Length: 239
Image 1 (tube, rainbow, N blue to C red):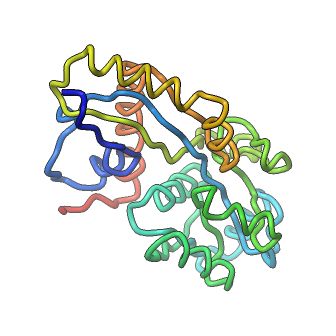
Image 2 (cartoon, rainbow, N blue to C red; image 1 turned 90 degrees about the horizontal axis):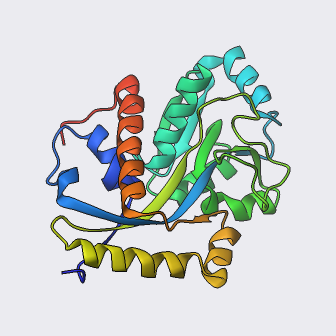
Image 3 (cartoon, rainbow, N blue to C red; image 1 turned 45 degrees about the vertical axis):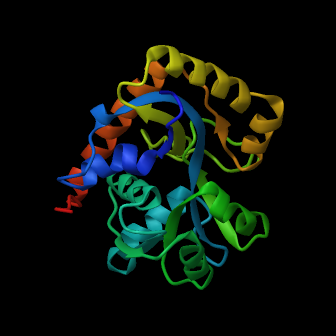
């Protein structure tokens, strides 16, 4: 009817299809409307770490691989799987240490409890700005105005590592196309307005507003992408 909406995100709408063998829902249950925001991740180490670049970190890992660990906000969350992707792309080992949320994970890194973390940018940004965490790379396709001296993963030598935590509107399957189109146009105008887009930018995010067809294709690509990462890491669960 156009009045029932879900703010979907990378977890339930992409990663979970790869992570769990069975789910109580399927892609065909949803009609994508539009992407609202995408926020890149950031590779961070404690400010006391000897690694001052991705190359330094990789050298450190390869020198003593059995001591390498990485933290995340939780098993199966996008930061965890982003780190698994990083391991696969860079060809390095690492033991995962899962925490119950970004706050505890950041606190543990501040306490030097593990080697590195890939985190959603807003969680780590205050500590990067305060000099307590060192950002080695961002997972966006270009450098961020908020962190102009931090290279992208591609610039740091890790290819095919553009990753964002994203949120977007989806409606129930069967919602009339006219309602989908109206919701898309209204949402696009809001998220691309100067006030909202600047708020998104302040947290390192980028406003969405793509068409329903473009958003549907993006979700399909995300599901396939994360399936390859989850399968390679052996993380599939029965649920």
